[in-house]
Each structure stands twice: as C-alpha cells, then as structure tokens.
Image 1 (cartoon, rainbow, N blue to C red):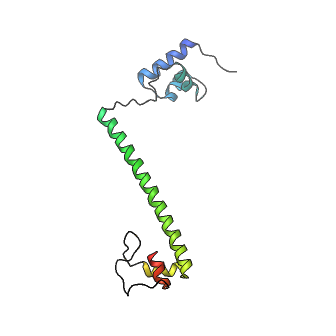
Image 2 (cartoon, rainbow, N blue to C red):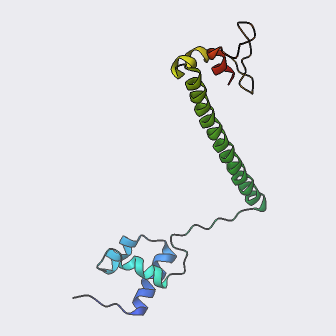
Image 3 (cartoon, rainbow, N blue to C red):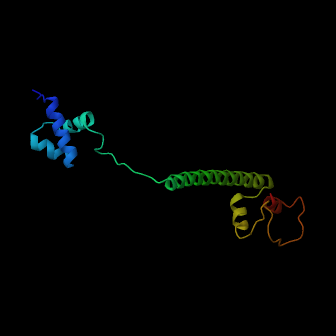
Amino acid sequence: MAIRYSEGFKMAVVRELEEQDLAFDQVRRKYGIAGGCTVQAWVRKYGNGSRGKVIRVERPEEINELKRLRNRVRQLESALADANIDAALERAFTELACERAGVDVAEFKKKAAGQLLWPRGRTFRRSRPAPDARDSAYACAAE
C-alpha cells in the first residue's frame, strides 16, 4: 500500500533539500521515503526552481561575441557547402570531359596530379605546342 505524505511534510523536505544543498537520496533515506523519484517529483512541484539549474550572467560584450561567432560559423558552413558543390561539379565535369574524349578518368587524374591549374582549368605550364581540337588528352585537361 502506498504511503501518503502531507503537503506540509513534502514542502519541508524540499525546503531542507534546497537550503542545505543535499542529495535526493540522502533526504530520501533520512526520512524513509520510498521510491527513487518521489523526492525529485516533490522538488519539481514545490521547489523554488533553483535546484538543478545553472544561472549564467553574461556581459553585453559576451553576448555580442556569441552572435559574432554564430555568424562566423554560418559563413563558414556556407563556404564549405559552396566548396563541396564546386568539387562535385568539377568531378562530374572531369568525368564527362574524359568520357567524351575517350580517356580513362583514373589515368587522367594520375597525369594531371602534379600540374598546377589556373582558375579556369588551364594548365600552368604547357609541355607541348598549342593544342589541336582533335587532341583528346589536352581537351580533357583544358576542360
């Protein structure tokens, strides 16, 4: 059979727990209260709200710093997403260009690995004269 406790008793237990900063189990054993969550439920119902909560006071410059850092994270996430899209487009474009030129993508990547590229995909140094449109290996590299 369940034991019924008076409202006054519950409030006194919660007040003692909050004032002396005692553990739930310590108070429960002291008063012989059955149930592991009973005292916790009383604290939620009758407590002043200070138990289990951390109150942090921030200065205005800390709040502004937090906003600035969140904006910076948002910018970096956007830049990363753009870079991932660019890389995916570059991979797809390379595969398509190599397919049209009849060159194996893996072989092309091995050949192009040591070359520096200009922003538009042109090689930094040409090892041969100006390309002919029918030159499939150069067409793949220039694309």
